[in-house]
Amino acid sequence: MTLIGWLQILLFCGILIALVKPLGGYMTRVFGGERTLLSPVLVPIERGLYRIAGTSDREEQHWTSYAFSMLMFNLLGVLVLYLLLRFQGVLPYNPAGMAAVGPELSFNTATSFVANTNWQNYGGESTMSYLTQMMGLTVQNFVSAATGMAIAVALIRAFARASGKAIGNFWVDMIRATLYVLLPFCIILTLVYVYLGVPQTLGPYINATTLEGAQQTIAVGPVASQLAIKMLGTNGGGFFNANSAHPFENPDNYSNMLQMLSIFVIGAAFTNVFGRMVGNQRQGWAILAAMGLLFIIGVGVTYWAEAAGNPLMHAFGLGGGNMEGKEVRFGIVMSSLFAVITTAASCGAVNAMHGSFTAIGGLIPLINMQLGEVIVGGVGAGFYGIVLFIIVAVFVAGLMVGRTPEYLGKKIEAKEMKMAVLAILCLPLAMLVFTAIASVLPSAVASVGTAGPHGFSEILYAYTSAAANNGSAFGGLTGNTPWYNITLGLGMLMGRFLVIIPALAIAGSLIRKKTVPASAGTFPTDGPLFVGMLVGTIVIVGGLTFLPALALGPVVEHLSMMTGQTF
Image 1 (cartoon, rainbow, N blue to C red):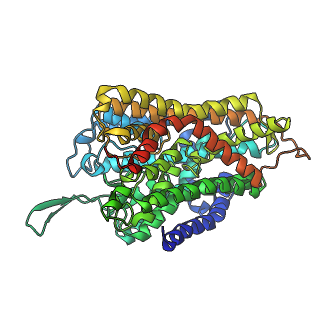
Image 2: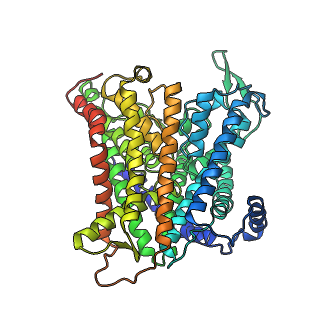
Image 3: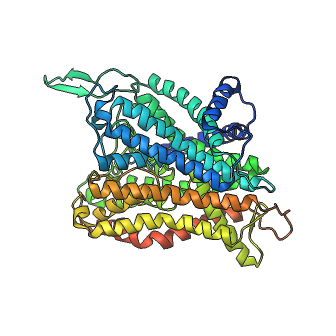
């Protein structure tokens, strides 16, 4: 590890923190229906979309209606994207002549992009047409991200409002998230990426002659526009198979820093939105501090592990850290930072091969996802994910002092705890059960590319990434098989909607409760004690749940490496 490396990490953190408050203030005005700089242009479009949806910004929904609207919209998204993939071969804007996508892969891809996971069992430039990339995948990048933002805002209202029955309007929240936040920022980002050298064209692939005289086909396309929303919306699906390691998706260190900031900025700003809407910004900063503490620890461990490298290489005089699977353009520090960011958020974009990290370096991305991706997390999803742990933390605190647990004046009772635990347990259910079956199923084991504990880690990482709606992969696992396409798709749906429904049920329960004024016995939730309690709850729950599985994979691999054993 070097001083320059840590300065680069601190530069990223400093820029991110500087963006949290202004973006949080803007998003608060957007979701509150207040006038913004873009209102003169976007209000007529917004109202037109309300008419199409058969609603208005004056109508609000009970949590069950809100959930039903969300589920029906996403079900329609799965069906439309599935059909688009199946009929791709006969649709226009297909200059490379891509054939129709198979049924299992179409199911996997449709559920993946609707669930904001963007797991890719295919190579984008060799499988998807321009029309599929734009009308199918990019559209879902917008609306799946907007769905997560809408759920987060609905849950925030449950704490912010003194009492009531309605938690907002799904159609209004989703449309505002898309029109006022995602779309304008993506237009700006697209132009910046084009300036930095990212392609944006509907022209055919380019045929070039190499220095040896051979013919090479260079894939291009509408890359910059998809890159902007894949990062800002924490989607992660790359236009190219190499994702953000591809020079057309990530040309230099400027684009690399911009992509990392894009992944985190909305998720981090949601903590400020929360603080503003509940009338106490210190509450938001406390949540961000808990996220930041876990993030810095993860970055430090990963950077240390990759900088130390493999001791077997040192024995041959080949030191200098672990550069296997990393771009020379970014080096160890930026690859380590990107890996922690993309797995702390539900993004999944990668600029290095995570499977080539050391055992401990690969352990941290796994843990980030297994904790529920609450370290900033996906846009909206990270916030309502950490609220589930907040409920558990304040409930435990209440039991310790013999007082009815409450958070921001809302009493946390049996129903809220049941829903929170249900949502938290659905992730290990999808991650560990599917991993256990795949580890003994011969057809599933045949897809594993590496022997020993690393092979087990490949399976564990795949199902962890799917259920956590991340989408990154360890590599080495052949995922484009009927078993993995179907089970990973089911894992993505479980990880997305079995968390959202309990979160909305909590919102519906809390919105009906009157806010109780703080008293001398109220547990303060805006200071260091609460931050420590929250971090401890997240780590303990995650550790108790996943430690046995991690011990069979990365931990054993690291201990074996230290003794000189290879597989």
